[in-house]
Length: 501
Image 1: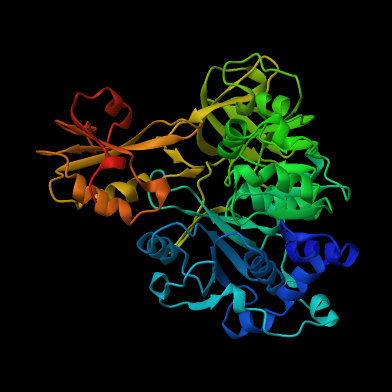
Image 2 (image 1 turned 90 degrees about the horizontal axis):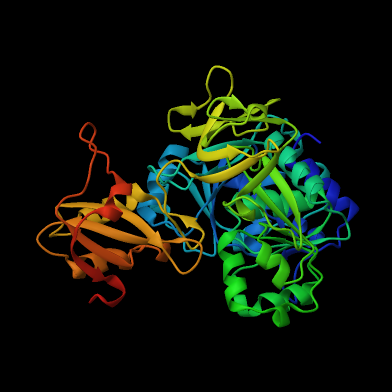
């Protein structure tokens, strides 16, 4: 196959009755989802969102969202998947770099000011046309070439405004094949990916991996620990695509008795206690990123196995993908090195992302030999496999989302009474972080801070504020020395959860 449209067309012709959509009593079939997508083609074309057009898809996971994504694939458009929780002003700054021809909104009220020159469409109202059998065979997306742009996913924005990573059809097809082969997907499987679809895990591993493996594919509009295991049983899911926060939540909020009777045989994001507690035979740990092919290392763990390295099971990247080379600190993996930055390079075109999309073109962050520096720290174990340690750059992750640090600091810098500001992290009760706001000034202006917090998504809101004499900064360029903030002398603390509004 040379493009995603071919993959979709082949699977719907072979298995139109498989479930494809939100888990529940009325999950649509793949045939129904494709019919809905085909019914949207005329609307997309009239809006200038068809073949070769750049389209931002902003929304929460739903049947409408998945049908809109399918419609963009079949139309041959280039879909940029965007976090719907971002505030309008951040979305506007991001989309200015992307310059989309159209924006499709799903489950969120349209804000046309974020892309004033684009057409704006409601995903739930796209499917006004009548699909025909000929429409599938004539889908414009079938004309896309292997290395044409399929779409973009954006970075977390931990060091600036989130950047859009350009991904080709080859990128997605190879990622889907790698996941399907590594996790042994087949027609006997039902894949449940209960995460927002603008992430690489649910879309790349769950949807595209599932299509590649001819599985049933289920998503969730909203993750609920109390309802999770009954849903897993009722849907007869055999594969779970998760990440750290839901794994930790399920371990704390549910029991073996809650999960009893499930049919899950494999779970992505391995944790030894999760496998043991919930009686799952196989778990997979991995290393990768949107830039690094979506996934470039993977390892299978059996229930009862325990890692002998301090980083833990979930940090074990394991063996490299067959088409990816890697090294740590500039030394190929065979040499064995101490901790250093992980670098990756593809054996063939299209495996890694193409670069970062800017308003003035594509930025290709590869050296002359094709190596991409990931910004992550890792080491090589005694078997010559990768162990991921942590992000080399300073980052904060809350409720599974990376916090755009620069944007959050900019919002709080405007509060009266704050002379200087920085955000940093502290450990939360779960595996992720909590945000702490460090301010310099005469006092902590809790009212102003709360007013700004109220206008931010939950995962961008600080839980506490600390007043310090000064924010530690680099003497040359003035960059915040965040790792020194935890050791700074705090003059005053404020619990923002109790601060007045």
